[in-house]
Image (tube, rainbow, N blue to C red):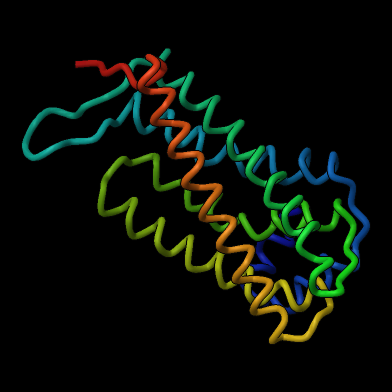
Amino acid sequence: MIHHVLGLFTHPDQEWQEIRGEEESISHMYLTHVLLLAAIPAVSAYIGTTQVGWTIGNGAPVMLTEGSAMAMTILSYLAMLAGVAVMGAFIHWMARTYDASPTMTQCVVFAAYTATPLFIGGLAALYPNLWLAMAVGTAAICYTVYLLYVGIPTFMNIPKDEGFLFSSSVLAVGLVVLVAMIALSVVLWGSGIGPIYRY
């Protein structure tokens, strides 16, 4: 797992070819990659919001209660695990349009490795700061999009022009899934499952 993560940052073209050639089950992928990496932003956010807090102006740090932070950590962790599966399913469904025939397992593997920069970027949550979160988040999103556009043609074994359209479709669905998760968060907060602040 780790050598693929490093490879995606150092030589993504070659790494996608290596990943494509491997036979990996969804359960193995989740156990060795997704469960571990999705824990990075969740655990970082828990530590950052309960131990460090964030400041607004010159005021004292604002922190969450441990119970509230734990509930939000678990929900966000589950949402990330589900997000990888949903994106994998969409990629598998969309592949037929482009005459590619990957297995469902390969599509989930692709979605998981593509999300790697987002998972690692979650380390920024250890120190809750708006500008730090924006800078790291922007960099993580940009590199994730880069991996997507580089990886689709290689991984699906399709021409680059078709790969561009395929990648754009996947990116659009990813944005819809993100907006849906944000909307669900707002609904949960409105129903009483939201942050509880410690003063």
